[in-house]
Length: 457
View: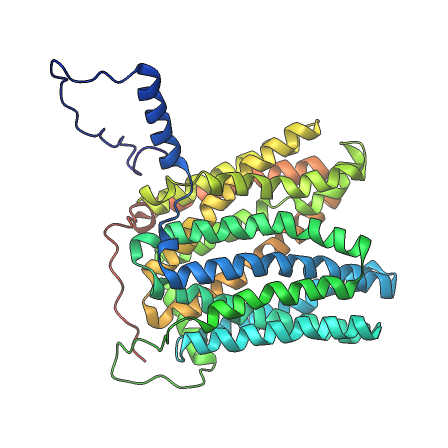
């Protein structure tokens, strides 16, 4: 809550003293200007984590690399369609990428808990880089092989899952706890901006040059993320128990992380409310139909898809207040309720600009909820489990919207566009409020959280 903590108590103003005779009198416009500047500084995104060199390099490298990742995310389906002339093959890309994402998100997170995370991040980054060069090479050679494209996407998805799980587990090792919320805000804001910029860059490259040029841009930009990983210090596991964990974890290690989540209401509900938000209230599968039937044609689709990212970007740039909210469980629920209600309201809009504004409000709330989910996960879990829990986080974050697309499309076919859109948003807002009935989640306070006891094998 801007200007106050999560209890709704306004922060005290700085102490003042009465002026003495002869003291210079500050002109009213200057005083007002200083107060306005103070308000702006408190509302602006918190850059404190960038004072730490390791995080600064990681954030810069990955922010740049994510633009290239989005370029490839557009170029690959366009190339698949150009080769196959079939939307079926384009749709198959999602299924091909989802399975490795789930498997390697969970297993890669388990590996991150028993090896040097710097080494694992470098290896998974090299896999990603190699896939990009594979895409570049096949484009230069004009191979036009659907099987090769699908295989490269599958391997790329596996590398992305491992790299993302590992990177999320690295952040608490290179930053003090009090800076983690601000660090997550910076990361989500950068990725949101890249999500908006990357497709525009891809369209420009594909229109003027070629698929090879798009993949070459990705390869060059991704080198910044690889450089950041190479500059990290050694990050071996923090041995909190006498018993050493296996060097190659199996299903038992993955299950151990899942059991830990299920036994901690705070973590379980943080994942649960996210799944509810994405499955019930994600409306993007309805955008093409809405544009065609309600907003005058497919030219409106781009605005609908961009609206959520626009709202998230604005929220990120004005997020200085986020780190001052300590009741993060309550804040997470409020953010998701706002998301659900904004989505529901946008489904009632019959003018494009109003729908875009309401979706942008939802996008702003979505960024806030994402920051608190990630922060709770990174600060509540013990270091020996952070990799596995980050793996679960990646699976939920990537899988939830895909399930939401399926839910929205199926519901629209049964009950119609507006009922599927509005009903999903309202259901999300109502169901998520139930999380506040759980005392551990309702009373969760980031200032008093203690790291749980390490898990014993």
